[in-house]
Length: 212
Image (cartoon, rainbow, N blue to C red; front, top):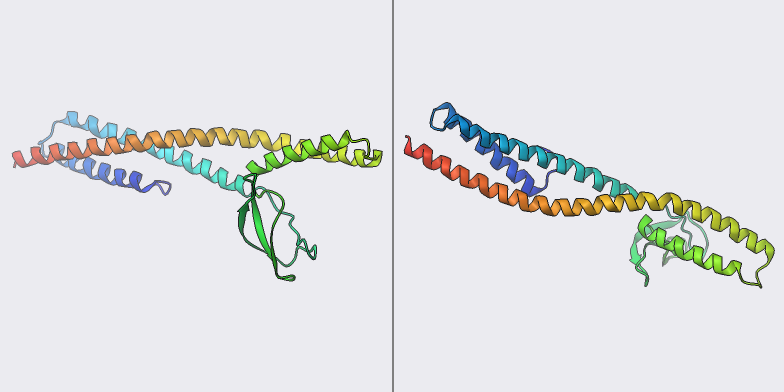
């Protein structure tokens, strides 16, 4: 049994296995024609299709889990400015909908939410906003040349990170959305196929009882 199957997929495999076993028994006893083996072939094809979908789903979800852990906080306590006594205690969304990690500093005995997102999806939005702020500041006449140079370096580095991250996230989101659509379609197909097998099973039971 595929470890990536959902409960309804596992249930279908059990029904399919029982159906095939019963079908082969009746064919062997001459109570069903060999043409009934075509139904078995259809069952095998559908289970293979389901296996492929389950493996694809597991791969995409595993990638999503990896991406979700891609952003590493460099958090520090806003009071003592140390990192060594921080304990992650949860997450919190800000007014912009960005999800960030919440910490407790065991040295200062305070809790705080870090000011950066903890995931690449929100990090892209964060970088875009910071880039806009820095670019606006560059045009401020009160900013010194040295500060402008620092901003230019920061913009260059952040833009490079953004350009690397965005295509990866966009490609994954496309895959993930396609998966959700396919998963919904498979749910319906599995339900319909299971009902069809149960009907075939009733037919076989009826045929077996008639030929006893």
